[in-house]
Image 1 (cartoon, rainbow, N blue to C red):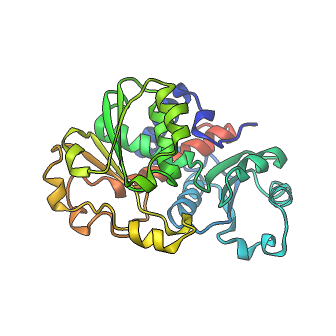
Image 2 (image 1 turned 180 degrees about the horizontal axis):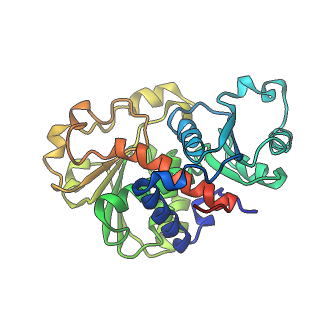
Length: 305
């Protein structure tokens, strides 16, 4: 039995295989319609989510399976003080696979130790979000045709952004990747990620606070929102929340084939005037997310079309 807690749980070959399967799902959806018939996915979301939870549910339904679970810890026995370990022990009796989101880092790891079925980390605090990373990789590969020889800019909240942390870890395993880190000083990428991922893997990177100054060199621009829920001080959030807003004026500095990604939800960091720009790929990401999660569910349940 395998779990997916961190993107590094998957080899590069396994990632490529999942992306290949997702591509085939997109091309031949009917082929996969009943591969998880009679299988049940439990979505345990101790933290609010729209895209990720519904993406998992849509993925399982598209595979012919069924879903159960909760979308808020207030609607579960966690509100009575039940531990994560006990919740997982119970729910694994009712399901074949569990997708779990939790505000505490490491909670999915605890769950994996107690579960009788595969656990998928659907986001744990500011730590990891591996299925969003698979979504991002699929989008990049479908738009650019490759996962190597790319200059990728990450803009906004790089300190608390779990999607940023996971994607940097994944990209560091491909050849000739250059990373540009764009953020205010207070929201810089944590030093341990720079040391353990970028430096360790000899990934070229630079840090700047000026988005326009580096825009012309980017193949991918990964925008993030400044997340209010990760701040302990509301004054700091208010001061930093509008640090970077992507608009038509800034897009004039970009390559004609640059791709704009965003894990969503956005607040105002990408102007709606950008939505019709052919370089805007963030809604394509949403569709890709369902398909790559279908591929992952199949892999962990060991079923084939």
